[in-house]
Amino acid sequence: MASANDEIDALMRTEIYKSREELLKDALRALLSMKPGLRIEIAIDLYRNEKVSLWKAAEIAGLCMEEFKDVLASRSIKIEIGGTDEESLFRLARLGLI
Image 1 (cartoon, helix red, strand yellow):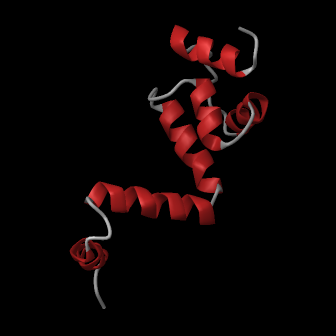
Image 2 (spheres, one colour):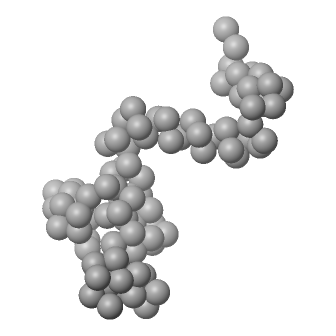
Image 3 (spheres, one colour):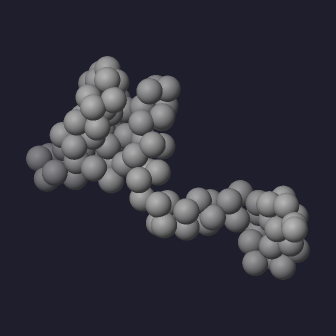
């Protein structure tokens, strides 16, 4: 049986994908489509490791802010509210408040 790397190499030789990164992004999109709960796990990890703000994590998870806060609380994860001014302006604009 071929390994995952062998299969990736085979797809790369077909030249369907321009790069391994493009192939992996497509594969990840397909995986998340089949298993949407993984989006929440990704969002939690990124939030816990301070890679994204609470707002961005909720967006990645596909949840509203309150739903995402509930998920964090159910896992005893401390909620810290913050974010950049740019993120705040983007959210306000998206809501039609500015």
